[in-house]
Length: 362
Image: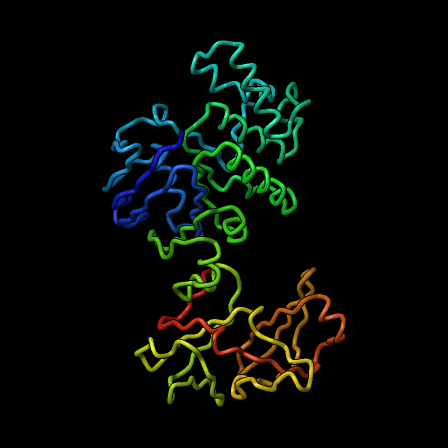
């Protein structure tokens, strides 16, 4: 049975560089937690401190009510899956999965039974006598997963395990990982820079930047209620507008926008974010009836990007490039073309209001 893992005022310094900056978190037994953030934000460093591969500068890692800072990796009840599969090339699938069990000197009949169980779990029955070089990348990653869970770890840590795979295989393996976690009921801690992956897998997401936790919440909370403009831009796509408060509204260039939630902002300059799918395209001439007139904007289709089920349209407002998403069906129905005129509605309640400017990371 998994036990609670606590990160208590955890920091990691490399000389003057602060990689992880005094973070605290409680991870519940059986929880699927994702650390999400751009490269260099400290997420892998946290994972390595949890496994014991990285020394802690300050703070504690508490597992099952005991501080484990000085416990060597081999003595922790954790499994780990790396980005590079790290399989033994001279061992078969069967032997790779059995490796951790053999190191623990388990009886051969127990090892055989456990390996057979794992082969069924990861969907590689019939491949047990193949070597890693005879497997696809996705199959190799399944073997790495199988080897990690064969020892029945209390916690499984995964460090960007799918980043080396192509898009379709990544999506398929996400399903495998989620199913394994639910069937086994173990705690999983997953590191990724891919926001779609984090939202698809996690019970809770920890968004990191500059070694700090910027927001912790369910995927729904992170996407629908981003606490900062950085999160609004990093998780999903947002349009950003900088304006000035003016009589309870926001002046944006020559336009006045009605925005909900302005009363919480004291500064004169406000930064707004609105997601492309939350802007309405008013195709019907009567569609504007009952809407806030200041938030209806007439503009021109600049670029059309077909994304499958969604069509993304680029348009300009007050010299700023913005995006709106419509369904493929709606796009086909109205036969939109480049340079067509369109009317857009920005619902007052669809804006996120921030006091800080979103700085895009390259």
